[in-house]
Structures are given as C-alpha cells and as structure tokens.
Image (cartoon, rainbow, N blue to C red; front, top):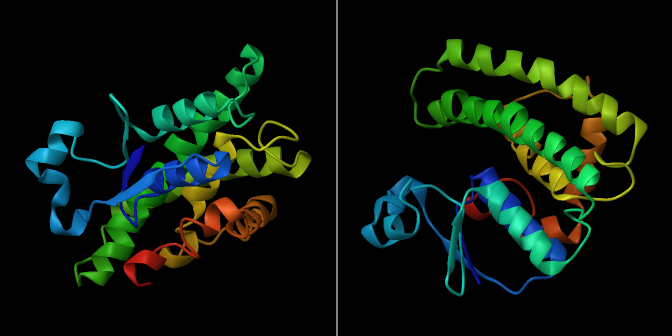
Length: 210
C-alpha cells in the first residue's frame, strides 16, 4: 500500500497516523505541494483534484482523508472505526466536526496568516477573522466533550480523535492560542507523545525543516 502526503497537510498526516495506529504496512510517497508536484500528470491520474492524501492499495485508488481512514480502520478490523451502527454515527459526528470546523479554519489561518508571513505577503485579516470565529464556536464543544471522557466516543480511541489531534497540530506553529480549552490542550499534548504520531513526525512541520 502506498500513501501520498505532504509535510504541512494535516489531512494527509492524519491518514499516516491511522496507518501507524493499526500497524498497516505502507510506503510513504512525498508530494511537495510547494514545487507543484501535485500537478504532475501521473499524480493527477491518481487524484484529479491534485490534492493529498491519496492511497493506492493493490487495484484500489482512494482519495479524501476521511474515506481513506475509514477504509484502513475497517480493513484492519480494529476499534478505530466501530462496527456498531450507533457508535459509527457518533464517531462520524465528531469526525465531521473535527474536519470541517477545526481542520478547515486552522488550515485557513495557516495559509492566510502564517504562510503569507513566511512568504513576505500581507496577512488576509478578513479570512483569518472568519476562521477564528469558526474555531470559537467549535472548540468549546469539543473541549466540553473531552472534559467528560477520555476520547470523543468515550473510552476508545477512534479515527475522530486522530483527525482532531492532527487538525490541531499546527496551532502552536501558526499562533493559535488554545489555552482556554484545557481538555483540548491536554488531548493534543497526549497525542503528540503517542507512537503513531511520533512515527509520522516529531512535531508539526518537522519533515519540512521547522
């Protein structure tokens, strides 16, 4: 199995972390988005959107982080994605919240503030403000859930937790303060110490030289 990724892509890093968590043998293939490698015709033949991650497992080519994570978890028959339908629904709920209301605004802040500053470009304050307002709605909900349970679905680690940890991973680098959300801060710090995280990167952006 081959997984295509980029060092600053939290969706791609989440798929690598899930693969590590289930112990699946895989080969990493780096796609440097900064060099435009995602627009190479051979890669576009696999992923017409020109994004990462992409998974190739024998004859199956799969794109989109959540789809890949569910596939990996179900293939391995682990509890990272439960087989019980109500539990699946709960995991899907938190997974969607983590992806759409944490990962997306964090990536927006990463791109329109941090990367802009790295390139010497002006910060897009309007888009950063919108992204921060989304986080101010979602982070309290997630913090409350993790205040009352070890993981989003109770006592078991699932792909929702790994996606959330990956989604939050850039916050210290890009200057997002989550100190008002101690349960989220604790969950992120815990996740960074796990073998499935450390096998992918020691810290956000490590592979790119941060």
